[in-house]
Image 1 (cartoon, rainbow, N blue to C red):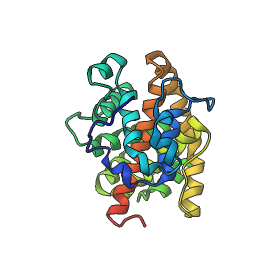
Image 2: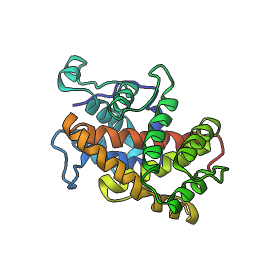
Image 3: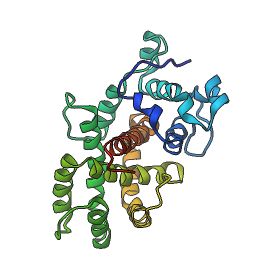
Image 4: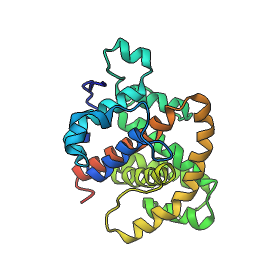
Length: 248
């Protein structure tokens, strides 16, 4: 059975909402048809059986499952049933997705680069109306709705505002969840934001769909690790926005 490797980059999971953790648990335990993954161990653990769906009560087991999926079988055996640290997984996913990043950067910055890669790649697939929705949803102050201009503005605002990172993460993670498991995130009662996030799910889903072809060639584990890392990045951005008071 997978054992949690102490990891400061995953400790925040204990403070996340159960609705968000539920998406991560689904990625880790269910395949594309909703069937239980043959390689997963999470649903067999006592804490899962006792506390599910109160996921915060067994967050360490969730983290251990993620760490284990990240490492290959031989590496996990060598580590005594411990997977790899989250940052190693994040770096691996970014390399697979051809994200421009510095491995020496913080986890938060690398995650932001990952989210930006998915969002900016989808801009070219959006209609003019959808591009305007991106500007509105992320709070950009621009009247230039060209994909290149929006991408440049997003890079700037994401480095200045934690709440902007949260909005970007929300847009990307919601689209990925809809595509992978057929349901989006549980969103707050912000009608305007919910509408915009729903409108943008399609173009981002197309980018992820195209990525799956490359993922299938690389190995099935990436169908677990890529959406899982994007969900973790979203939850971290949400946690940071709440901690700073920018998100109530």
